[in-house]
Length: 80
Image (tube, rainbow, N blue to C red):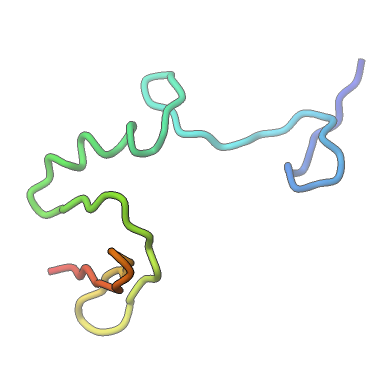
């Protein structure tokens, strides 16, 4: 049996072998939130805002940040 290297998963055929990315920690697959957020929450300079829809990133000016929607209203979070 011979398998060909699959260039990607957006192709028309799913036959073959290939590499794919996943989030793993300690040898176990898990969500990015479960893998990285517990240690990040201990940082004093980070606030985690849950259940918001990101609208865009702001990279202009001295304080880059992110725009998100909360209860139908656009809000912003900026760095120090």
